[in-house]
Image 1: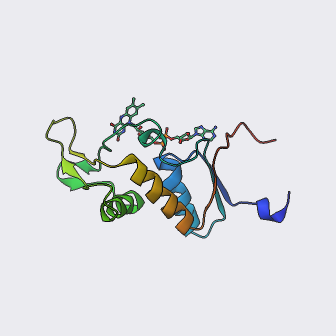
Image 2 (image 1 turned 180 degrees about the vertical axis):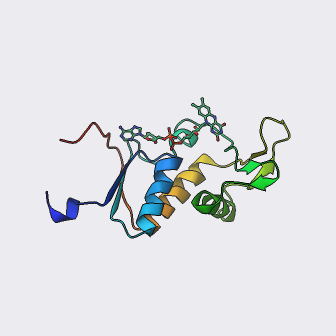
Length: 128
Ligand SMILES: Cc1cc2nc3c(=O)[nH]c(=O)nc-3n(C[C@H](O)[C@H](O)[C@H](O)COP(=O)(O)OP(=O)(O)OC[C@H]3O[C@@H](n4cnc5c(N)ncnc54)[C@H](O)[C@@H]3O)c2cc1C
């Protein structure tokens, strides 16, 4: 294998979990590759059109912060989300509406800023 194809961390799947794992690994200095079968990030939240995101809270307490919290702050700054809101339907504690195209953009920015590399349109089928 050529040196420039050696990674410390390879993440398969660029949904919210994989994308933010790649951000975390890249920020720690690991040479990181994120492999995604589609041509954008976000997984079910973009490709599947599910939303709003829920939930970052338990009662009135925000229990999910860290890099996901940063994602929402960046989404707000970009005008792609109003941030966390009370769930007036009573399904859960809070809901976080978002624009799916904005999520694709912000996730990609965060991954690349972290120094991770992206490999789109690639399906992991096992190591050769
Ligand atoms: C019907 C439904 C409704 C939902 N509604 C909501 C909701 O309203 N609000 C909410 O917050 N959550 C909702 N969820 C849950 C939410 O979708 C998940 O919690 C979230 O998507 C999990 O993120 P993930 O990154 O783990 O996985 P995913 O979002 O599934 O991302 C996995 C990624 O991996 C990629 N991938 C998979 N296999 C490979 C491979 N072999 N090679 C390359 N890439 C691959 C996929 O393309 C995808 O991008 C819903 C889920 C479902 C199924």
